Image (cartoon, rainbow, N blue to C red; front, top):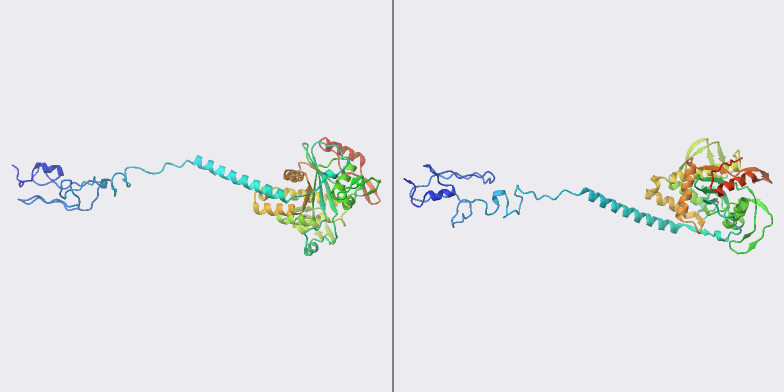
Amino acid sequence: MNDWPDGWSDRNQGYGRGSGSSQPEGARVMRHVQRGSAPRPSAPPRGGVPPQPQYGHDDGYGRGGYDSGYSEGQVYGGGGGGRGGDDGYYDDRRPAPNWGRRIKRGLIALLVVVIVWGVGTYFWADGQLKREVDLSKVIERPGEGEGTNYLIVGSDSREGMTADDKKRLHTGSADGKRTDSMMILHVGGNGDTLISLPRDSDVEIPSFVGSDSGKKYPATGRHTKLNAAYAEDGPELLVRTVEHNTGLRIDHYAEIGFGGFAKIVDAVGGVDIKVEQPMKDKKSGSDFDPGTHEMNGEQALAFVRQRYGLAGGDLDRTKNQQKFLSALANQTATPSTILNPFKLYPTMGAGLDTLVVDKDMSLFDLAEMFWAMKGVSGGEGKSMNMPISGSNGGNLVWDKAKLKQLVEQLKNDEKVTVESN
């Protein structure tokens, strides 16, 4: 017999309120729906409908009843319907990043930046070059040989220097410019060769065409010092004189003045030079004890300019110039300089500001010249003085037999076996 009041029957057991026992079953608590500590319902009073827990939700039958939690997604902890929130069971995380693709994109972006930077640097530097020497004005030239021959000249040009600069660098204030050092650099496939030409070399001034006047001057058999050719009619006559007296064709010309020379050294932070003998000269400003010195621009200029007080005179001077230029090229052509824009641009700017080259010289030619000098300093090539056989009125006379052999080896791009006297 059913002891429940009218209206309360076994049908209500579908809502979890009835059972076969004499007492009503407590409300089931779903483990994943933690709704707080709701009071357990007591047995319904006789003669009425058992009280229902009020959860503020219609049970679907028009009366407040048990909230199943399924109608609003609350069973899975969501605040909205369906899968609008984090239900704790579905994983909506983003897919794992494709690191291969990201690295590829990064490398492409870096490559683009490097290309743009490189192209911009190239055009900037190319615009700084002073292409003022016209080798097409040089007449009666020797035939071309294998490899490339550069005539590298250090002049005493004081262009752009202030009065304080001239005083500090001990350059004096003479007008015009003269060659202070001259070298032939041969770049080829059998080792690079750097040959110093003493400024006091005895040479014949050949016929030539004036670089400004265009007038042809015939040869008179006149002999003079090599640096006089530059003083007489500039780079074009110097190239013509070197070619005439050696028989070697000069492909490119590069000249740098005092001011640019000192600025380059300071821009790279100084150059380490080993001094073999005591050096002291008031005219050049040199004052060095034997040993290795880190020279700034002022000291380096004094080192390469000293002529007096050296045991070998002008020949020792040319050796010092070779040593310094090779060391400078070796220190400049390093990753720490090339890859550092804060060092690269000041260094290039200092050099290009006073560098004078021939009209056909490209930046690639200039780079080849510096890399070859770096190679010579690293033992990959040969450095030497022009072989000397004696003197004539204080001028140094070249050894004709050795000169002929040297030129033949350079023309044929053979390994140079000739030695200085």
